[in-house]
Image 1 (cartoon, rainbow, N blue to C red):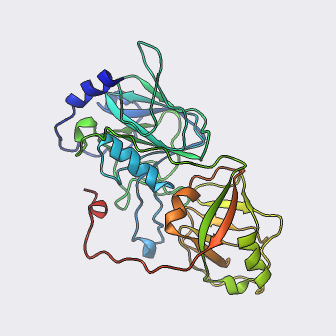
Image 2: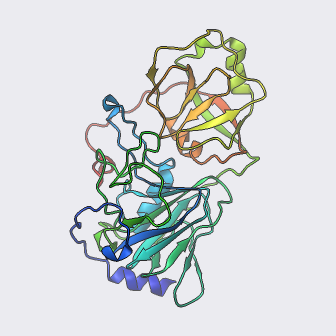
Image 3: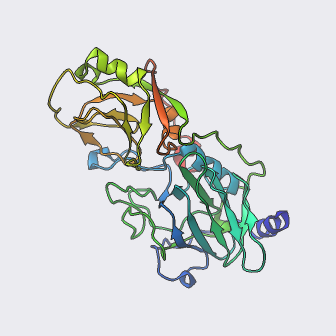
Length: 349
């Protein structure tokens, strides 16, 4: 494994200019570096850290559901922290590579292996940069904890951004190239810049895997109540924070649909005029069973929002598989720190 990696790294130390952006193609031979989707698994999408700042256009930020995992995978292969990668929900995908590449898999453990053309399959260490040769396949099994695995490829994806981002917004139908935000399908080919395009050296120290929940586990998410907790009775608010909620199979990148024994009791009937919603907002439909919004959520809605999960817990919220139980713990709101200037991450350095 080490020899395979060192050989490819010696070939990739220089930084080349980016090739012209290309849309997803039909034939791998059209691109010297590419990934062909042999099997997409449950849901395979392209995601970076999102496209914030377009709410006035009716476009949400979208982006990966686990930012920590994306940053870790990119750091392992020498990409900028916000570079786009593959986000796989539920596992079960097969990706075939044209040209040599360096990959890293973070987030939910999915038993990744490299299936070679001339030898036995090789296991891929979680979070570690691993070389893959032309024609070889990256196989990801079913996830054993959490929900979403993130795959970064050294050099990044060679696709045309949509509003400055390669994220796939599955609700708005907005995404890179000609994909239109849809999940990837078998036969799709995603062009790559190639390993020499990565600006940083690979990280030889894999990030430790996060401890992620499995079905039946209970997790605690911290929430700030409001802005519409006054639309619920005091008993309803207590139910939110005292009752366990179960993640249902109807959850997706739009939101985590929850189910509890006692629905949230309303004090005010009817609906609000549409008002804004953010990732992490807990919206309550008429049935009293809350929905926790994830990155592809609608920007506005008329159902009251009883609270919002704090930013530090959003990556965990994006990793909740069906069957996990949630307890919400209320905390006081904090005042965000306003940066004095652009950071390396906002610049994409």
